[in-house]
Amino acid sequence: AFPVGRFRYALLTQRGPTLPIQSARGCPYGCGYCPWRVTARYREREPDAVVAEATHLRARYGARALAFRDPMFNVRPERVRALARGLRPLDLKWSAEMRADRLDPSLLDALADAGLRSLEIGVESADVAMLEDERRMPPDLAHIEAVVRHATRRGVRVICNYVLGLPGDDAERIHRTIALAERLGSFAVQFTTATPYPGTTLETRAEGKMRSKKLDELTGFRSTWAHPTLSGGDLAALREEAYVRYHFRARYAWQFARQAARALLD
Image (cartoon, rainbow, N blue to C red):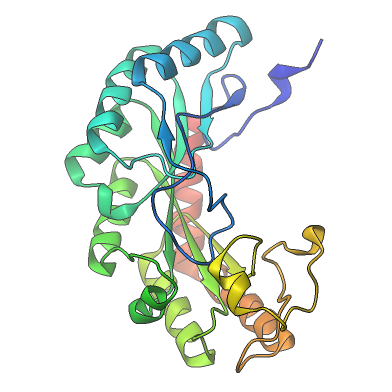
């Protein structure tokens, strides 16, 4: 038999396995660098169907936590509230990826009460105008900061995602993005290198400049195209600097330890 019980995510729960689930596919937004399937239409499942699957995963496989694999979990806040109402009695911990500008304290409270313990949001860059050039509709940075602060107070561990090396990026902008990440002080961060994934507008802009088009090399970990102002070595060094600066801070070490300890007791 498949060893389902071995698949655990300690930062959600140690009481049993964490299993994947999906409540929506596709994304209605059109960020030009996003690796999700950009040509697929957005479609949602009804909350009752998702709750029924969650109930089955708990009863049949002993799931005690769920990892929602939606590209965008909270497109319609009213649907998410209904889903939270259905999940709350199941006593499951769960994680999801959301847009910060579709969250407010009231919705965060409802989600936390329903078991949300890990929240992933896209911050991307401190340069809003540059993101808009890439077809992104960036949430207000002050709102993102408020979401991170409130979620953290509610015991939700926030992961902020950043992308370095978009066409308009340079070392100064990247340093501002690193400073923004430090200020937000989320539980965890991910710094990726802008990558021209197939089907994205960034791929179109990088036409004729690609160093590699092999799918197994389009990882987001290193540059695969000739950036206008930054070499592959420059971007690798800036990405390493971002991680070192973020994690080698006394404040971060204390916050991480405190939130991790809380997770182990949850």
